[in-house]
Length: 391
Image (cartoon, rainbow, N blue to C red; front, side, top):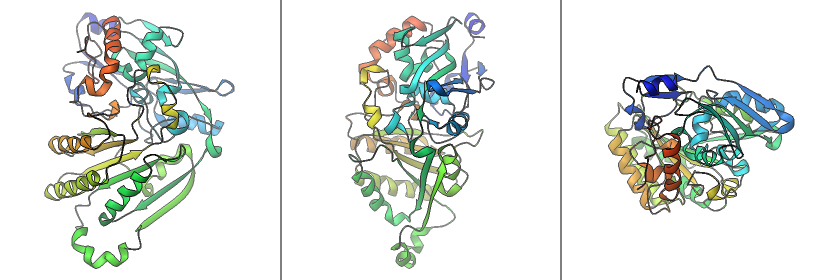
């Protein structure tokens, strides 16, 4: 298919789980969708701590093979996400404080190149390309199969999952607690904060009457122990999430923070509340995820193409929050993020950031050389594409 499309100059895009939201996908016009959903499998070699998956495999399939065997690996939290798309961008998740990023566990891939050839890529075969695959891999080909190193489960595969529901009036106190973990978050702990607005209930009008109750915060709790492969089903009081609903058209934007600025979070909370009150037809949410990064930082920066191992908190605004609001919020967070410029995990990109932000100038010279070598005609150019030269 790749050979035919290349010869006939037909644009194409390989899709696995269809979870991406970057504006760059909109560049595909009258093209071919190379559907990898038939390549969904996960085979465990437990004695050697290796897991081999197909290019279309989702997180849940990995979890359900690993957990019964007493093994684990870093992944994100939503079971419907395609494993390869996450890995090639970095692959962040709750276990990264213990095991690093998903790309740190990657041992090898089978890759269909722009010429249509199927090659092996690893630390011993096509080594330079293996470096680029780990952080910018969607620019060089289509991964049909990948092998990962896996690890013995932590705490016998059990996870303590806790949900706490707070009123809007508590927002500054919550951000202050999160800030207190900027330098001290244990490797085993991750924190996720979700801001959302219920348009059917204006809680602010009721606050004067409800304040005595809010002093007994939190308003709702749920603490439970679950097998780690069932974690997603219990998150957020086990309420069905929108993350895995099909056929959604989302405007999403991300941000990476190296430090927590309470005032910026508090200002954003107010801005978001006012915005959603004015636009009750919009259903939006904002997610701030604080993953531990001890094992992530233990891998030398030069080891992979991924440039932002020191990100502490990942921000993501989801659903139908409009672009202008997202971009304005992103600019405000950048000023207090601990970085000189906009910084983010590429899979949370909006699509307007450009290669300097998504890949970092210090990585782009080597990455663009790889692009010229492996994809000089830019066949793979619809997922946050690399240029052929930089700057």
